[in-house]
Image (cartoon, rainbow, N blue to C red; front, side, top):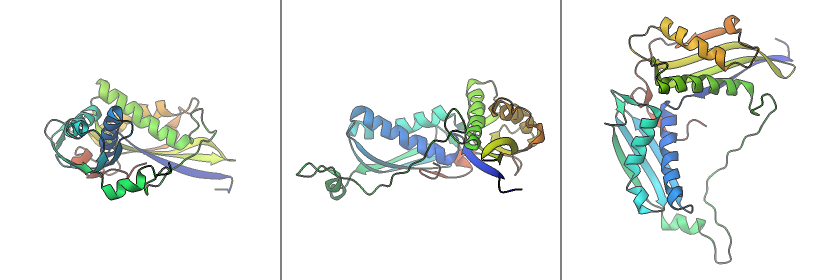
Length: 249
């Protein structure tokens, strides 16, 4: 492969991935605080495992929101679609360990006597746009996200009940002269109903991969499509693999 031709791979994870479940719960808690008090301070970490969600951190905001954290967490899990043995929004234990922000930390963030704006020790992540797509995102990650979004839409609508919430996609494209020109490999791992074989799941996934490709790229038959390479994927979500906030950007 020449220097002007190369392969590039991007990965996406579904909303039901254990780490993304935790991100969703923490985001929902933050949104609830900001809805009642835009000046709230929230450092909310979430861990999810078999039938258990643990929420911990420091907050400064309305106590009424702290009292609703369990409800907020259950609603987030319900919206994702987890209602299975091992992890269900109805039955999972939710531990709320949020507590008041330390006064020592708060004093470093509060506005100073001369009006200076304080700041905590949090880092800032940044990205950039590119002109590969109308969405201004690199093509591989755009396609990887799109595959999972299409699958999730049909799962939630009931059009495709064979899929579970937990899924991951990897898309490898071939670049020539700095531009994406062809699909090389697509890997999709998705949770599925127990009655489905790996071959069954592959045939269910195939049309979503085709639909996710840019116009004119539908002929992905020549590309390598790898579905559930480790085989059976019935046990998924936090029941199969513990999740934690901040591990998926």
